[in-house]
Length: 546
Ligand code: GLN
Image (cartoon, rainbow, N blue to C red; front, top):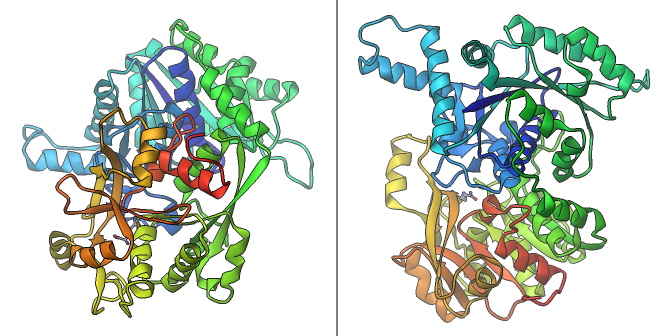
């Protein structure tokens, strides 16, 4: 097995995850089986207990593991579903070491930091073995020079000492272009390489992130100071379209440089489909305008954080593959009640996942507006639950109907909590208590979603079940099922035993679909999600099936 470590330098947020995902795709396209592994420095055991405001989106895997958006990038670029072996937080590593110590697995030895680095190395091998990989691609979270990720770098150093020819290190660094100077500066990048050196790591390849492409004189200067060959300093300028990045790297010969260093031969060169998608992105002209109605997620500095990155990417995948250019606006549900008519400018509306009671009345109004004005509506998880609430209040006449998440005492709890989840909440056992990960859903005949999965999904003839990813505590309350059914709401998908409602839709509407799961988590550039395709088609008024 070969190993590639990827670290970041100078500042966070320079796109190390996308760089890693791009490298994974390039190595796959060269004919190798790749296992990506994100090593996160934080001490949370998983990302489920983290506030999306601080951390961005929680990305859920098939096996229910709650991770961060980098796993989303890996899946989208690789076009493969990953599992718990592809993520390790420092907290989960310490937890294993301490559990082993408690189980006397260290034979009475004292347990210290080297057991932690050993555990890290075990995780790396596990990631490779579980995918039968040729190459494990380890992304080290955090930035070079900080304490938090030192043990990951130490594991890298030890592995390199043991398997010199099988381990390389790629450093994603940053070269600023300060506006008062107007030129690119390489000093911070030199310093970040020095930081790695002091941890015993000499990077083999540098990805030079910058607003502009690094030029030859600067690459040469950086090379003098870091000992990295100029041809191993790869330009990585800002781009508008992240899916272009693998192609940029490929044109700078990155794949060949990596393979040469790992003493591997290129078996294949298969980027045809990817190129096709990227050119679709570039050539799309006709706009389709979509509004996402949600709480306005800004960090303290007023910056919009990536809380819904998978929803946005899923919209892009579907739109571009149909030759359309998505224009996606954020609509603040808090301000929607002041002027609901602002929705008339949109061809389709999404209410994405969410938690808690803030601003839900604005979302419910938006759903009502879409239902009444026949604007395509797609509700994702909370967006489905609130569509049920809206229907109960305004069509069934159940005044004050609600989800018990918002109003525990409502007379009409049309969305409620399952009893086993209720017990866990009372015990204050929050971590990992939701319905998480992939669950099978069986689709009903003669529904729009059945048609969409059949036309665009990979549903083989006669098959009526799909599998989608979940992350929620509340469910449709079956006590009200009869009332909904007799009043025009369709239950288009349920769990195979029929007990849990998975999909609702409306008849006589161009597209009104709500899913209890998160379809956005399974959408990929080369495999847009059938329901997102249906939604975008309806929004752009394109005939389904064409
Ligand atoms: N808050 C809702 C629940 O827990 C929906 C969650 C979500 O949208 N992911 O059931």
